[in-house]
Amino acid sequence: MLAACGQSSSTGNTASGSPSASAESSGTESSSAESPSASPMESDTETRTISTVKGDVVVPAHPKKIAGMLYVFADHLLALGIEPHAMVTYNDLGFPDYMADQMKNTIEIGSGEAPNYEALLEAAPDLILASKTLSDSNYDQLSKIAPTILFDNENEGDWERFHETAAVFGMEAEAERIQAEYDKKVADAHDKLAAAAPNETVAFMRVQDKQLQLIQPSDNFVMFGALGLTPASVEAVDFKDSWNVPISAEVLPELNPDRMFIILRPGDVNKVALDTIMSTSIWSNLNAVKNNRVYIGDANLWFAGYGPIGLNKIIDEITTAFSLNS
Image 1 (cartoon, helix red, strand yellow):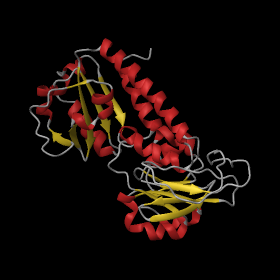
Image 2 (cartoon, rainbow, N blue to C red; image 1 turned 135 degrees about the horizontal axis):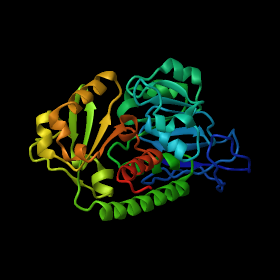
Image 3 (cartoon, rainbow, N blue to C red; image 1 turned 90 degrees about the vertical axis):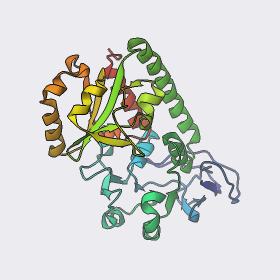
Image 4 (cartoon, one colour; image 1 turned 90 degrees about the horizontal axis):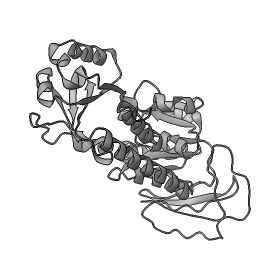
């Protein structure tokens, strides 16, 4: 939970790369809210105070060089029309392809699990966005580099997190508009999928650590929740308390889905593991394989695309797979 307050005395231009905002009457009292409530400022020298889990933090009213210590902040910022100045990556392979063109000028500062603090210091951000899960123990170090907002929202949904990010910049209305467009897109896709493939089953898997893993259907809220697709029978698989479980090729006939979405983690070993499975007779006799309904996805989108841009692209990939975009 964050709350913001500030004071405005003049009207000025919003710098490129920072959100536009309207002026608010003078006052410096903080107010609590379920999500950040921002009071936009007008000049580069003015600030606002944001109440966070670490106490009140004074931040620039119009930050121009924003750094993110969790990769999803890149998606949030770009969706709001803000180019990140510096950002951690999802893994060691750079920024996800689905955002790379928009991040050509963004400085890489290590990964979320292993930030490069020297690179962050050199980037000289004027605002840092961070998550409590990854950055709580390093908060003091981050705060010495730039004002740092620590989000404690790991138990919230993806859209709740996006709204909290947007509110830091006074862009709540824009965030509402973006989600409304997404909700309409999901509703349209849901209806088209229900009409096009009402009885088809779907298996959602990934290849990681040289293993084929089945993903718990309840953990794919887009595919099996929002879009209402029917998961393949998983009675033969014991997930226990995990959201995924390794499976052998011998289990595939028991699932025998009409369609398979396989998310491939980066690395040659995972590609080799998938090729090995795909060379078996078990594989070639599956319904999805015989009907050419196997789709390979990028893990950097499907497992890291938890912002508006990524979620929209996942919907596009699913509807394209069902040939609904032609």
